[in-house]
Length: 472
Image (cartoon, rainbow, N blue to C red; front, side, top):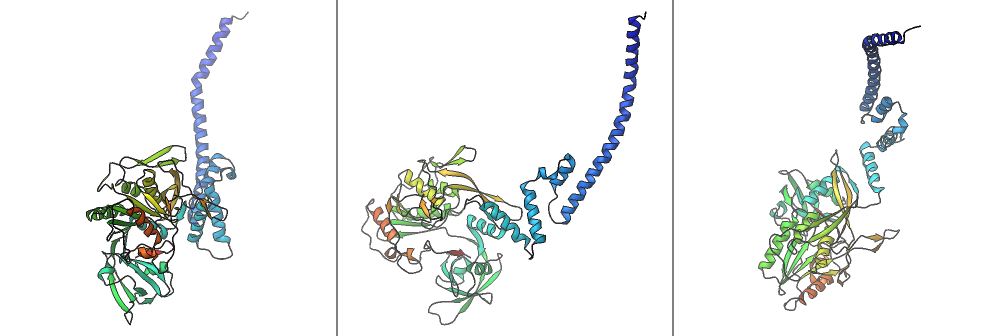
């Protein structure tokens, strides 16, 4: 009979022999497998490079999805992304449409459609040129001659000449009409095109042909383009009433300093109260409104912003800077007062620091973040909704035709504007019933003599809400 221990020893010996030879066998197998995988991966990489090179030759980004399909072995259709679909449709239109198309315009239209699909009028795609103008408007700085223009059948009418600027030094006056730029007639051209002709690089020159009431023949002025800061605040003491009038046209970067300067100078003239005019003001930068409010409230909530994840962020004023306003205030508002203008007026109302006079505001209760894109374009994306300190939601509501239903700030004293003819009805109290009412309300709060209206604002830059102006 076989000794079990012998059989056990044999089996153990066989396993020991097998264990000793296994590393050499597996090493040879691994080397063979590595070579095989290397060849396969090389072929995959070659295919991937081929697809990438094809995409690059055709002027589009490499197809990552195609490479992923090769690497994973999955059909490419399971890896389709929105980007792939957009590129595919773009290429088919660009190469297959029966008419030649402008690739750049097609791209802009596609991106614009992407934003429009959200149904949010404040989430926008801005083409490079428009984005540049938006940036200039926000910063309140540009290169030009220092004037504000309005459309005119003969060309462009000069509405305002800025105090510090080439136009003022060159003799251009409000009321002049620009009929030619650098020898080219501009009659009938869109005002936007005339603006492009007048603007340019700093240090270069532009020649304007002007016609002026009372001057028999057109004449020319040659102006040197310079960096110009757009006036976003105009102010004046109402003579005989000790009331300071401050018109805030936008909330751009220079507005904080200009607003502080207006309050300081009017206070030095012993103003007993202020009318702050926000009519037609489309808003601007939230941080500018916050700083301006520091003249009225310190360390107070300005807005509560609700983010997409449900969290809440709060913007509040700091300790304040410059002059502190502790006098009665009336704020003029209308249907085109929006965004930062509504925040400014709403905060003063919530803290019972101002009386609102005029008409309900627009009702823009959202916050946008600018997102720069690679070609100089810009995406403005709504990132939050905001609420006033009281919790009031001023979101605009419209019907199916886009007509206003509700929303915005409601004035304490409702006064509908009564047009009185002319090109600048907001220019003087005699023709501006809302301004007259604001002065009347303010006079009831202060010790002020009865006001006799004079055309003291005839040359004000305050535009009618229905009018459009361009800065050059």
